[in-house]
Length: 358
Ligand code: IPM
Ligand code: MG
View 1 (cartoon, rainbow, N blue to C red):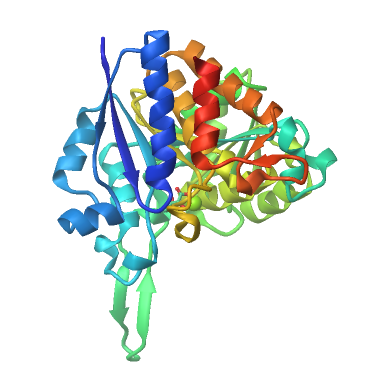
View 2: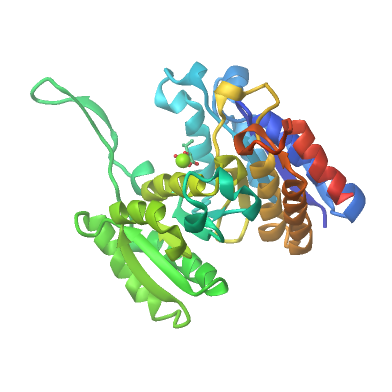
């Protein structure tokens, strides 16, 4: 059966890295019998400029109909002063919410070839392999009430609400227990239960779920400590499960351990395994259009798409090994460069992966 893949390049470096990721998909279709149909849709600032909406109805419909989505990046200074619902980020948040992509998987893996690029000492990060499971459609990102008002004292006031019901916690919890069970059997749930009621409920539900997963050992950590441990001794973590806001912050910290956020893919999945795959990095407007962005996060997102949505782990392995070979051969984009290696452009890096897949 032909799988329909929707590509949503977005803004900034999004289009240039998606171009390389699409070349990888096309190569797999041409040389390895992958049966796919590619389509493209507007999102983010590009969609605001073309249609006045960061997620036009036609894009949402295409996203619903697709079997999997490859997403580039969104945002940029041109749209930052717009009202919130007309900002690029709203398009991404609506996509996550409308498609119920509640389970966000953000692996942080250190490629041994890139140990020098990490902000931390090699002995602290070598062999690092963490999976952050972030809740993506609830918490303070979506909690109501939220808004801005003028209060009784005549001061401007703004508020958001962090809330989770037990059903939302249970579904992300079960996903995390399953993932931890398929890895090392260690799951660390991160919360702020010493202060927040919503975190206490989170912790209670995680503890209740633990009974169903005897092969997984569950621990808990407060988010402030988790941030510290992440840069002090990150290898103590295997699978981490946490809410939307904490996961946003911790996954950026984890990304930096691996040398470059330009290397990290992610998957956002619904209950049926339909997914949207995107690099963890953003639109990087400062380097957009220069052909220097690292396409590997987008290409590794293709690997996740193959593995999780198309059930083609065999092809995912091929893509991931091709990335390893390219690094072995000394290819480096600017973000992961060192003195002994040659600088590759976005296109050269993509081309190297494509050559290896042929
Ligand atoms: C991410 C990003 C998004 C988020 C922004 C762009 C809305 O930072 O995917 O981590 O906060 O979730
Ligand atoms: Mg983020």
